Image (cartoon, rainbow, N blue to C red):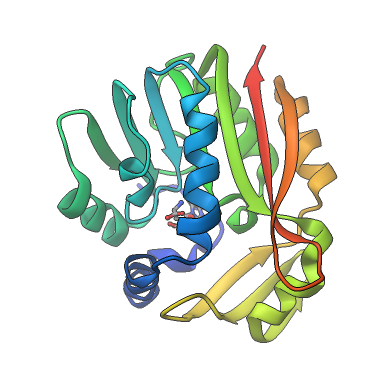
Amino acid sequence: MKKQYEENPFEDELIAKQWINSVEGEKEMVRDNESYPKLRKWFDSTSKGLLIDIGSGQGVCSDKINGYSQYIGVEPSSFLVDRAKELYFASNRNFIVGNAYDLPLENNSCDQAISLNVWFHLEDISQASKELCRVLKSGGKFWIHTANSESLEAWKDFYINPKIENNKMIGEVKVPVNNLSNNIFYLHTNQDIQKAFEESGLVVDSVNKVWKIDNKDEMFVIFEGHKK
Ligand SMILES: C[S@@+](CC[C@H](N)C(=O)[O-])C[C@H]1O[C@@H](n2cnc3c(N)ncnc32)[C@H](O)[C@@H]1O
């Protein structure tokens, strides 16, 4: 039986299609200009091996870096996993339906872990951090790119009449090319995210804020670190 986790709008076929249109239609915007170069720079500085991509969506990150011996994308939406296989499957790449809270990988098996714009969709960052720590080898590296909590007011502007419920913001969100008609954003602070990593046995080596729009604070933050 499928385990029960919080609602993930990307598991809905309509939202998955909107996300596919957005990612695949976005050219020379924040992903090309900021996210992928930052990912590549980090990746090129690490030693390669088995790489896990947590919340891999339609799989694009597998194609933005190279040199890994094996890439495994873990993604709860079967629609997105199907699209990832269609576009990016290769002998050293695979895409699996799975969840950040219960990663389908052995203990101490991964050399590197990446996750692009997933952590703000997770309610339980403590459980996700424990799972990240469990699957990484000792000395294994992680790169987590998520929303900068210092820019929550600017994030609210991306939502159209959002409903705020306790620790989450719900509603239609403006993304490039194709808005997502339903989305959930958890309001974790950067400090809470860092604490969850550290309490799980991970070491945070750097915290960098990226993508400044107008005169506001940067919209994203990247946590880079390793397992002791
Ligand atoms: C904004 S998309 C990013 C997808 C991909 N990382 C990228 O940047 O192209 C957010 C992704 O997080 C995934 N996600 C949400 N909850 C998750 C969970 N509990 N475990 C793993 N992935 C999750 C969604 O299904 C969705 O694919």
